[in-house]
Amino acid sequence: MAQLLSGKIASAAWKEKIKTDVEKRLAIGKSRPHLAAILIGNDPASSAYVRGKVRDCEEVGFESTLIHLPESASEEEVLQEVRKLNGNPSVSGYIVQLPLPKGMDDKRILLAIDPEKDVDGFHPDNVGRMALGLPTYLPATPYGVLLLMEHYGLSTEGKHAVIVGRSHIVGSPMSILLGRNGKLGNATATLTHSKTPNLAEITKQADILIAAIGKPFYIQSEHVKAGAIVIDVGINRVGEKLVGDVDFDRVEPIVSAISPVPGGVGLMTRVGLLMNTLRAADGRG
Ligand code: NDP
Image 1: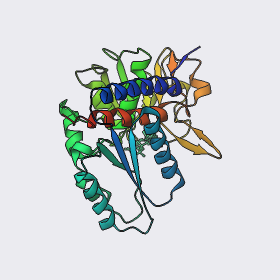
Image 2 (image 1 turned 135 degrees about the vertical axis):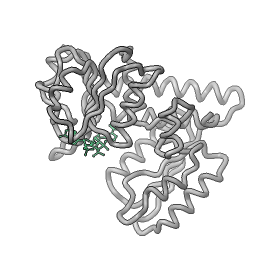
Image 3 (image 1 turned 90 degrees about the vertical axis):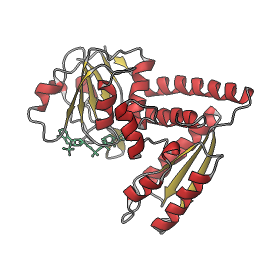
Image 4 (image 1 turned 180 degrees about the horizontal axis):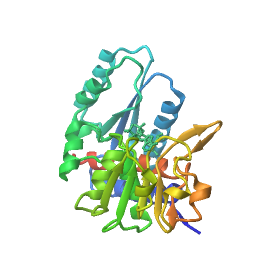
């Protein structure tokens, strides 16, 4: 039976470590990390994500601030909040919850975020730093995947990692991180996407297969090699249920380790954000 890469177990362990780090900081007179979030409108999924992030902050001893703007807020009003947070020394880092309401220029808002406080790691300055291996905030989801693997003592060095999906927030940074010369890197990373012919031929070569596609149950048993490690980033709603990009029931019997959905990478993404905020409390470096 495959080892279950549980985001519940791994995130609880990482949060305990972060909590201890916060206590140590406070004991030597350092500041309490402070995460702020701007939420615009009432999208239920976005509201739930932000509530989860605020709860995480409470759990680990961070301060948190939620700035909730109405759906009708103008781009200028959002930018004003961004500027206020940039100039507020008590805020270590902040996020602007995506997606933004229709018509808002998300690039303009992203570029207005002070890269030193961009704990989502989406600002081009931080993406560039990641690519160059300079101190930065790693994008929370790929960072969370690395933290999940670290928790379970999985090594990536010398392995063939195949990533399916090349989005700017998941697949592309995942391939950079796994391929770079560093901790939980040194894999041979292959990045695939919707224009990749004969996908299964490539995924079947993977020692580590990471699915970030956004299509329920897309990865089937014929896509995986026996004994592979499979990490499912996908979160798809099918009826009332949340399911991954991997057909868990079919794939699990073949592989050596697999992350479930829900209870997998989603929880680790939240840990990635906490780790970035902890770092931000001392400056990005
Ligand atoms: P995007 O829609 O931005 O990207 C999807 C990627 O999958 C694209 O690169 C696309 O290729 C590729 N793709 C689509 N169909 C195929 C196919 N048939 N074969 C190969 N590649 C394909 O999605 P995201 O990266 O934002 O998210 C992916 C999934 O991860 C979603 O389910 C999302 O909900 C989930 N997610 C989960 C998070 C978590 O915390 N667990 C965080 C963020 C996302 P192309 O570029 O050619 O179009």
